[in-house]
Image (tube, rainbow, N blue to C red; front, side, top):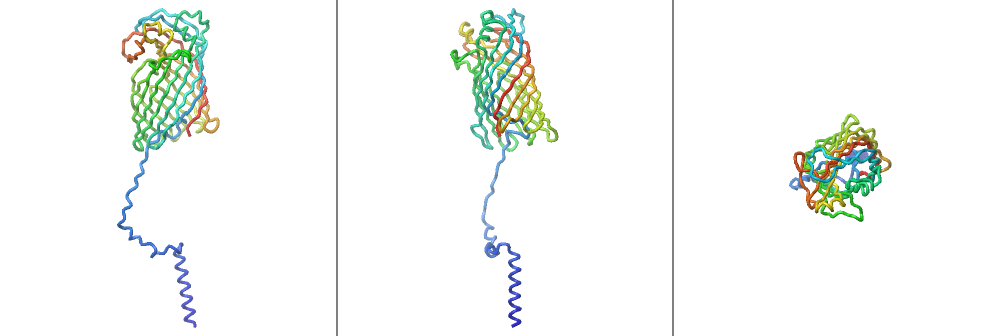
Length: 366
């Protein structure tokens, strides 16, 4: 009897030890023999990573922007229409412009977004209205009178393509087609006067805080068509609130981040386009008279989140005239002058430099 009791006690203790060592009683060693899989080839699963289009701390990308632009008083001088060498001294008629103002609507919407490719398409409408200090019937210069009556505006479409090759290298392409001039809805320009711009850059994202790229650009930012090298530099300090956002020579800003939703910038941007003056062009023996407007804006710019993805942007600064001369293009056919060409201008015009301000409400990307 005592042996039976001893045996039962021993069996009970053995079972207790076995269950203590096996958390799941249904998963015994003899239920799974790993040696059966020694010759089985699972293959290698490779997950490729790609460079992001953004870095940490960079300002949010604007998907849709609606803004109002205002320039203070300045003087505008216009020559007659003829053939003039750059820098020549010619008679000009000078007018006081009390203000220049207008609305800007810009959209850049992602239509395809994957780690390996991002494609955006967009459109822009920019309007400029000139307030001369004299009535239109007292403006003798034909080009100045047309600008006073109709203003200048740009409408266009654009695309941006970001193609990463791996976790550091990428290709960035931007292209646009714009129709610019003194046209109105009742006096619309022919699409023959579209002006095309493009830029292609090859770059490196060396860390989460730094990316850079180099490339070439076909641009109208200085008024006339030109080909120039471009350099992209985006940098965020890991140990301070400072950073840099630039696409030289088009724009460059130093950024100070109060918080991820409150940022201050200081820097400049080049703006410009070639504007066809319709009424005057029709009297020039089938030549398109185009004002080559280019300007540099030195500014302070403040961006702050209002709510959700809605941000406010306010900027103020000094607008410096780069170019306001005019070319006569036979049948609207563009030509390349560059920095060293000696083609003559059809008009030599100049503007003095006012202070300006701009405010916009923006829908930004997540």
